Amino acid sequence: MYRVLITDPLSHHGIEQLIRAEDVEVIQKTSLSPEELLEEIQYADALLVRSQTKVTAEVIAAGKKLKAIGRAGVGVDNIDIPAATSRGIIVVNAPDGNTVSTAEHTFAMLISLARNIPQGYHSTIQGEWKRKAFVGVELNRKILGIIGLGRIGTELAKRAKAFHMDVLAFDPYLTEEHARKIGITQASLDEVIVRADFITVHTPLTKETRHLLSTEAFAKMKPGVRIINCARGGIIDEEALAEAIRNQKVAGAALDVFETEPPGEHPLFALPQVIATPHLGASTREAQENVAIDVSAEVLHILREEPFKNAVNLPSIPAELQEKLRPYQNLAEKLGHFAVQTVKGALDEVTVTYSGELSEVDTAPLTRIILKGTLSHYLSDVNDVNAPYLAKERNIRVTEQKMSRSHGFTHLITVKIRTDSSDTSVSGTLLNGLGPRIIKIGEYSVDVQPFGHQLLIRHNDRPGAIGRVGTILGDHRVNIATMQVGRRDVGGRAIMMLGVDKAVPEELVNALEQMEEIDAVTPIDL
Ligand SMILES: NC(=O)c1ccc[n+]([C@@H]2O[C@H](COP(=O)([O-])OP(=O)(O)OC[C@H]3O[C@@H](n4cnc5c(N)ncnc54)[C@H](O)[C@@H]3O)[C@@H](O)[C@H]2O)c1
Ligand SMILES: O=C(O)[C@H](O)COP(=O)(O)O
Image (cartoon, rainbow, N blue to C red; front, side, top):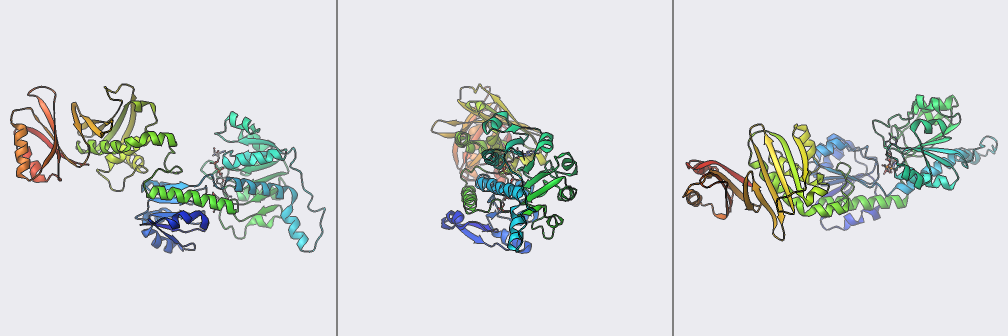
């Protein structure tokens, strides 16, 4: 039974699939103190949050069983992603479900700002009738500057076009084709800042975007510019904004998000030109249902070890590629796990060569699985999320190579491992209908099913050697299930690969190593 802890208010309809799932127990506790969260997280297999719960490194470390963190929304700045990654916890979000709601909210803020609607409402219900005090401006033919033309920025641009605004957008990843398609003008950040009548930000909060709109930026803006932030507090320097409003450079600002939330008594609220909402961008019935449905489905997939798509700490893999790579996953993990058990010393380098059909596709997801198989020999709690991170932390170099030639196989994966004292190379393939096979160990051709307990023996090719090995195994009551022998030259160096029915005890390894013909005995467990 998987325990899913929900600590922020999520749409009931959205999480119904979790509540109905027979293998899931849903615990909803939405006003936990930080201490209570540290207690509850210990028992959770997955945690579902919105933006309120602070999922710190401490919370993540306390989540001993935690496999997934689901964010019912876009921004993951309340989750310590590096801490989750280092512990192999998958973080997923729901990037699409609240796009329209947030674009609509931004548009509502844009109109409210242009026409002083909140200020007019306040004054009117207090019995005043100040028609002159609230004269606004039209949106028609004004320039809307959008910084960050992703999902929300794009939806907003379409709505602004319908209001006959001229849209200038800056986004380092914006292509001319996308700009042309939605009928807007691509611009530099400076152009947007200098030319726009309204500036709205729709980027995530990152090192680059923190205080993107600062004193320096406000100084370059058109007098009377209006500013909107429905993305993240911190993208705009709030002190600098307050100053720009006070010195009348900025005519008004509409804010849905703040550097600290809730903002409490804020200097900006003393300025009548500022309108505000309490982080309501995604707060519609539709958006909340969408994001809760999406993230619940993703978390269920992760817990059930099924494919999922919106991981924040794993590169996304297109469905078609996932389908293509799925058959190789088991082979990849076994190859990594097999190869590492045949070397001694500290791991320096893992090189994976994909040959034949596999040379034509993006194999990075398979390399992560190979790495997981390799590192799991040394470390506990390794998965394909944290394997690259753990390798980097240990200065293990990981490289991928591609070759079109595959020595008679339609596809071949070769894992080469180098340590400070030895190296090895193991190749495997999928045999049509027969599943994964190891077909080469170093220079020796073999045909080994990579499962269960194995014994790799390096010996000299002499009459009677194989028989004596069989006798010694029999004496130790270890049954041989399969046997492969490989050699390069008659009477030269050779290997034996034995599949055995139980783990090989150390005394047996010692007894085999006493044999004159034997160089090395390596038990392998897969
Ligand atoms: N107020 C709310 O309730 C609410 C709701 C949903 C999303 N959001 C926030 O809105 C933001 C945008 O969401 P989205 O779904 O459109 O995300 P998105 O990822 O689709 O778009 C973000 C865009 O910002 C661009 N970008 C990144 N760095 C940039 C930079 N330095 N300068 C210019 N552009 C840059 C990216 O290229 C991308 O196109 C996020 O921060 C999200 O958390 C807020
Ligand atoms: O990033 C987001 O999705 C929004 O900021 C929404 O946050 P919320 O789930 O707390 O409304």
